[in-house]
Length: 165
Image (cartoon, rainbow, N blue to C red; front, side, top):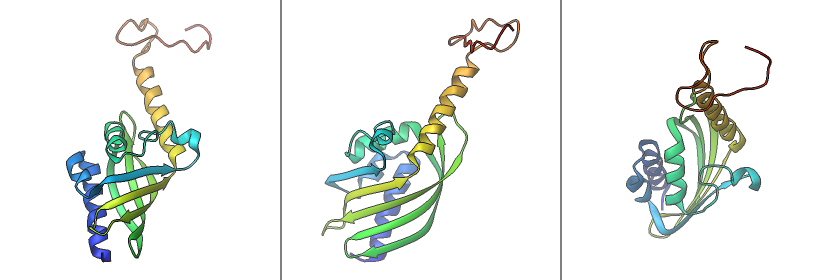
């Protein structure tokens, strides 16, 4: 398989990721394909899709929680049936603000040209922090909004014990 074909398959996978089209995402994967995030195991277990190596399950969790707003290829190295790809991306956790991130993917292809294995290196702690920030912002929005508001609207009232209001 040549460089252009591999990069086209990877591009198809990412376009499905960005649009949330899981069928397009899966169209370039072998039936027995695996995918994993690389990093500290305790962090990976908290990461969306980090508890499985089944690409469809990983994709479902990522699609539900993290949007990919922009993606730029930095470099790609192809050797035999493997592609190493470096990206700069802009992500957005649901309820959060966009942020930049770098990804490094290792892809392996079978003899029919389908992806059989993917490994992704990224700053998983950054994404978990963004998810925490988005959750805190959502909680703060549902709490008290002023001195005359007891927080009785939707969501719980938050008391940080900082003294009287």
